Image (cartoon, rainbow, N blue to C red; front, side):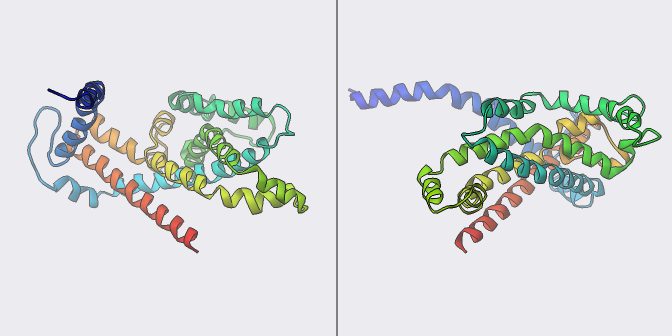
Length: 292
């Protein structure tokens, strides 16, 4: 006869079983199956095992490296101003004497609620060289004489995509930084104030050093998200020289335009490896700084 504890354990298994069943069907199985697909030449109709040929092809694919470079450039363009703006706003809006700080927090977070597809379409319409609002505004202000074909310049196109991504996510990182600031013991600020330290000094000497774990969190999550940039570059469209073709856009084209599912799966796993490597490098650098 089962003891009461054994009965409780069985009940617990019954309650958690649905989660694991759903995860196995819709999570684990697709992951393992896509790994198998990466070793085949599957096109959706036929599939033959070809070993490491897709990965060998990947190592010699100039479009893969070009997509990787475009992804890194767009990520850097977006993440550097994004974190600076988020940190400055967090330091300002964390002060109790700022009136309406809760309102401004909500306003700055609002772009994060809008879907990336919608933002990408709006950016494409705004920077359209014939009918776009940006060109019309610049011409009305007599800054330019002729419409600028923004997506005809690789770096300008990457700058637009990076700027749009920065605008969408700086509010999210701002809230993360505010949460980190509010977790700092208020007694530290009170002691600094008694010693005559100003707001700038407390920010430099107390807030920023104690925010390092939060900054590391935002950097790692931005790396994971940055390498997977897809929606906005896809909606904005391809610029001259494939400047806005990120890794995931290239994966999409390989799999759902060219129907080369095996190669698309190989790109997906290569992207996964790149994310792991960059994350480990970030953690190692952070640990070295902490140790020093």
